[in-house]
Image 1 (cartoon, rainbow, N blue to C red):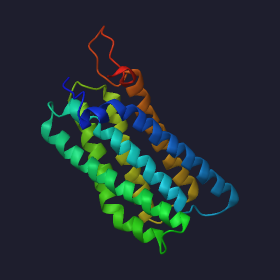
Image 2 (image 1 turned 180 degrees about the vertical axis):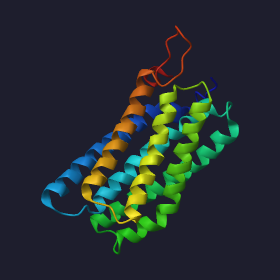
Image 3 (image 1 turned 90 degrees about the vertical axis):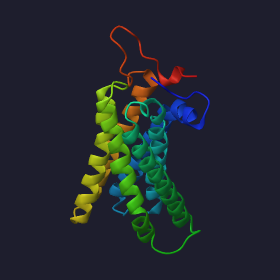
Length: 214
């Protein structure tokens, strides 16, 4: 399996497990915030959206860490996935920054308008970034199939949340359920990477973990 050890790509590859775990833990925090709002009978504010942006940004950084090990197997799919992942990372980082500005009073106006402006980049990043990397993982023998399947869970969950929201079904319990699924998925990917179970090792050969890389 080809990979970088000293370049920017190598740094992303070495830190991808931590990136997914951080993203998952941020979503755990967001779940707690949403549960508080549910108990209080209030609507989530911009601060919650800032957490969403931060969690997805971390996950996109982790996703880009898969590029070095997959680019030689499926170059076109991997390069396209990396482009969409980078776009998604930028869009989500911008959302995290904007929503933090609204939450702290540094920005005025409607946070929803800012979110809608960033939605195209977010959509392309999640659906095609994670989607293409998920398909690539399933088409190659570099990673266990469950890694590819977990990646595909993310765009499916995003599209479900977006579609039901457009249809007018957006109760807080549904949103909490979506965030829980995202959190568990991020943490599962991070765990598989950290323990070495993400890699499709040859039979009888122990796969190296990201924790021991470098």
